[in-house]
Length: 88
Image (tube, rainbow, N blue to C red; front, side, top):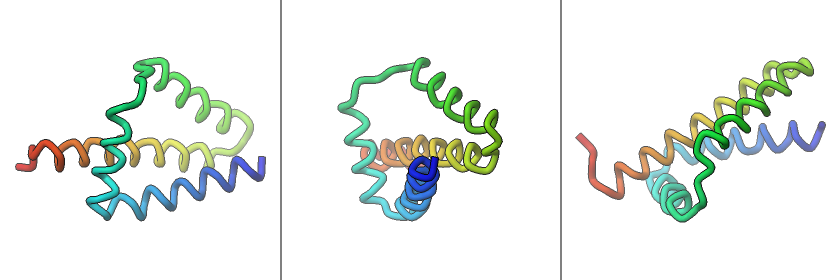
């Protein structure tokens, strides 16, 4: 569990810092574009991870993981807007 805790906190900090850099957003978008998409199944897996963490009493860790995932989706969307030029 210590490894999982470290990994979630580490990714959280990386995504927070990376969300301020435009080049990082573009790289995340470009790498995500070429990946195989799981669709709704990927969202179900994320919900299951959060649910298991909360069930076993790691409520803060579950919320941090959920926040990290949401930051990732926001970075992908921002990268798409930067690449495609959809900025208002």
